[in-house]
Image 1 (tube, one colour):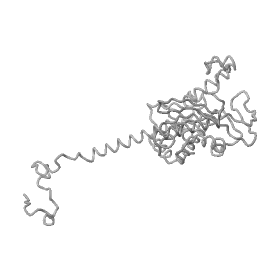
Image 2: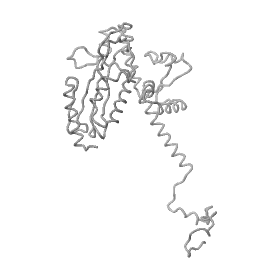
Image 3: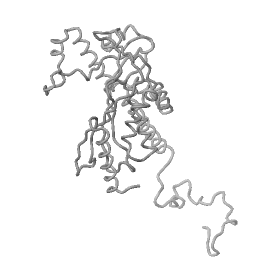
Image 4: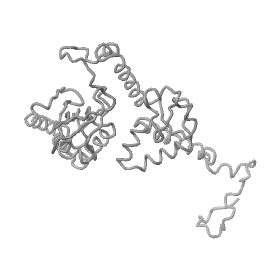
Length: 331
């Protein structure tokens, strides 16, 4: 364990080393009086042993493979808390325009596990793992099939400060049809990350579900993903919720990532949190119904003539076997 001064020294040494190794791919800012002195980003390009094919779904070139030898880099956006690297883990998030959401979550968990095992400076090791081992760890299969890069739709002019364009502006460039698809995908993405919306499977009334707005943005795709969404005011079926929580808590990292992709990580975290609160409330309710507070004078009621316990303190006890003082008198 290091004290805070030693942690600061370790952080400074790591920053200097990364700056020397990744001069073009590493940026950081230093705020001496902040709880997190160093914040920054490290970009890593994944090693590809051969040319790969990428298919874009729903785009202008849908169905036509794109041959590439390089993928856009994976970015680690980090912040070093005061106790890093020995007492506190590196705070970080992975950003990558071509990775699926569940891949990103799996990769973040794996990198955090690396710190748990080493309790040392880790950014270099994170970068090396991403570069050389992440594709195998995530079991990425080629060719890749991507559904466009919503967050990459920006103004092509480098000097433009308003990077994200409106739907109307996009329509002027690519036409109304592509602009509408962009708008629908943005709405789909917004709903998928909304913590107030929950996704539950349905087995009947599929015809009714077809009229839902969710269908228009691609939520209902087929038998495997038939679903509906409801707001926080409409609770999930109790049996389904309990089963889902139990399945999530018992799942391994891969299955957890898949479940988080399907149901939403925030939704699952909220369900687990609410379940813990409900368990505590049930325990409190049972305690109130089946127990009573310990009285300040616990033996008073044995001398209360109105109490059924009056003069019955030693009922069922052979007083001759008790180790009592010789001058003790039973009344």
